[in-house]
Length: 115
Image 1 (tube, helix red, strand yellow):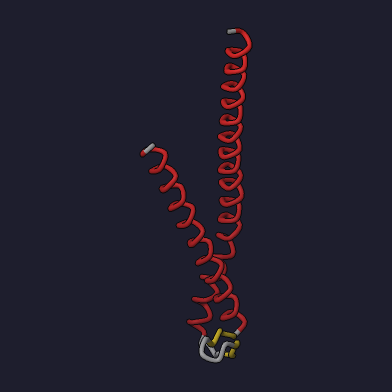
Image 2 (image 1 turned 30 degrees about the horizontal axis):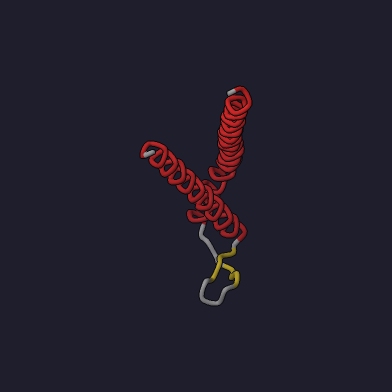
């Protein structure tokens, strides 16, 4: 029982970690995209303001934007594949539990009928 709890706890923690990583990547991508266009989010006024970047800042924003642009499909495919695998494992676990309960009921029924 302890082992199942530990595995489930670790699975949830890993899932949350990678969800936060994906959220952070998406937020950084959108932020760098706005900076690339010369805009920034103003949290005090809750609107998008314009900014003037010098050449070095624009170059740095462009580099980070391109890196995240190429990383986002990788992160998306990761979530697609491992999300499907987690669902497949959960589905197979439920199927095995259902089969075990059916076998148990069948054996109980045979024991009642035959004896």
